[in-house]
Length: 87
Image 1 (cartoon, rainbow, N blue to C red):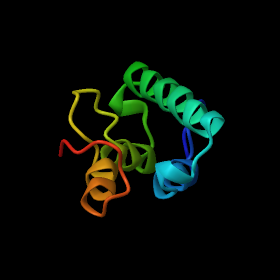
Image 2: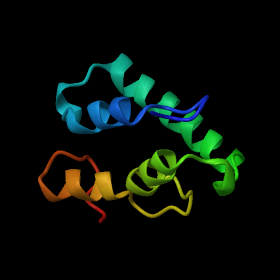
Image 3: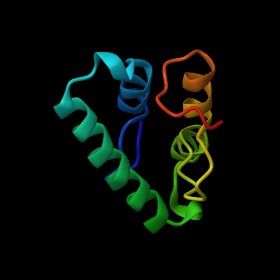
Image 4: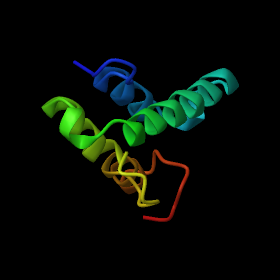
């Protein structure tokens, strides 16, 4: 379960597991918009107010906002599903 105003962990996983080559333009745009909104919400919400599952989800998705690749992006890149070759 995600905190109010945050993207659910299931939605994040679904977006991450579908190869970019199989996504439509609108899916790419939607992923980018929801990702940016979720990242902004993560930054605005203090760690002390986040649920355990939201903190874990932020860690896995890289929502620490420090320009490092997320664990999910690193995994996608390792198996050739990501578009970014910088790991």
